[in-house]
Image 1: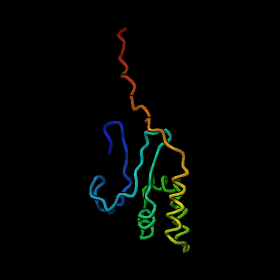
Image 2: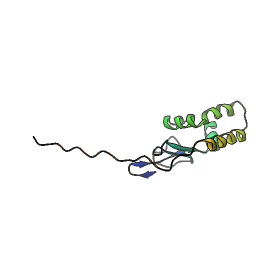
Image 3: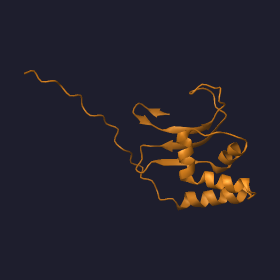
Length: 118
């Protein structure tokens, strides 16, 4: 998603045989690397559901899930805690997170260097 040199990403659940930009099953979150600090939003209940049924996150998504605390809550879910309690905890953690500035990083590239004639 996003425009040229201004990326934003959707965190999706997709079949492993579908192409990279092909069909997906469900959107479970978003990630914006352009804000200061980078912002992300993960819908906890669908993320926990898909992890429980065997979904394997990519390295980048795994990093976001660890940062968000979803993996920790998933381990507690496997031990028998209720999903509703974990989702409420995630919502409280989301509310406690500091506000992200709506200003984004400037995505400028340096001007090309021009060779000097000697």
